[in-house]
Amino acid sequence: MEKYSIDGTPKTPTISFDLGSGVLEIKGRSIPENSIEFYKPLVDALDKYAGSPKTATNVNIQLEYFNTSSSKCILDVFKKLENINKNGSAVVINWHYEEDDEDMLEAGEDYQAIINVPFKMVQVSE
Amino acid sequence: MPVISSSIMVDAFNIYDKMERNNILLSFKGDITSELLTSILTIMENKMENMQEEPKMKKKVYNVLVECLQNLYHHMDDVADAAGDVNRSAIFMIGKVNNAYTITTGNYILSENVNGLRGRLDEVNALTKEELKEYYKKVLNNGEMSLKGGGGLGMIDIARKTGEKLEYNFLEIDNKVSFFTLNIKINQISL
Image 1 (cartoon, rainbow over the protein chains, first blue to last red):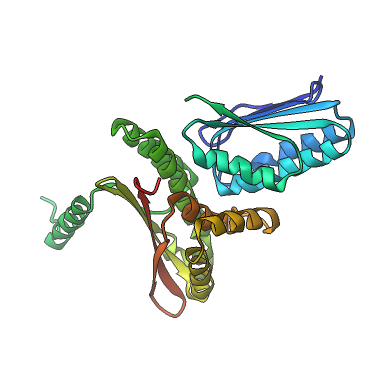
Image 2: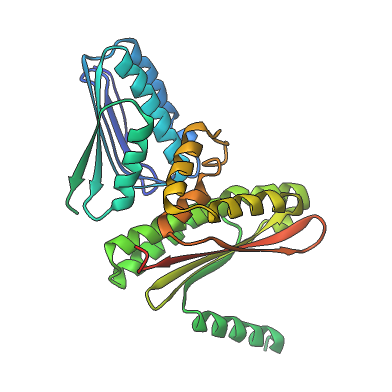
């Protein structure tokens, strides 16, 4: 089955997207200077997946830090997922945040307010 | 024996003394590259680790640092392209007094952009915490992203995360370029 994955660096997250099982994971730090370039392959993979999505799509976001340049790209990713959800695959976005990280929880709630997809806020201990 | 001009030595002490009195943890003057940002972030992360900084504070400082540094990084070229490479340099300082961190950045900007930037900063400074949240969402959702960065989200994000007003100053160098100073406070109490 087709998979898009990329290893994390100090400035970019680990991404793993299994198109065969409909599971997308983004973990780590997302603070690159050029986020558009970094996220483009993922956006392309989502476009491809949108053609024949699974009945359920599970998304796990577990970011320690992300910059405002990434926030826009993450929104683009979520907008793709919104469309996939509208077209029949049940999408759930699990937004992870560390228990004392109110900023990260708020960031998740910002996306929840903009994107019409079920969000689950998941608290993780440090 | 090499001859060192005494004025240089005096200057070095003046700079050192000023930095010492302001409790500067790290400072840099020069060209802002991607590699430099990575190094500064690593150094500051280690320093805060060694200082046994609270995780909450550590995260705030790191986040704000990323936005401040990337602002510098993305706007270095603007002035260099228009006014020559001499201006392709910036200053960055981070200090800690009592329980508050201060991040100061300084860089050249084109004088023609001063009013626009001043307007944006004043706009952000006029908003309450709740209004900042709404404004952030609006810009995130509607704002066009420039190839260079977050499309104006940086300052809003800094104001939101610190809960402080953005202090700034513009110093006109000549009719072409001005020097922009931004001073960000991160206070333990406001966390």
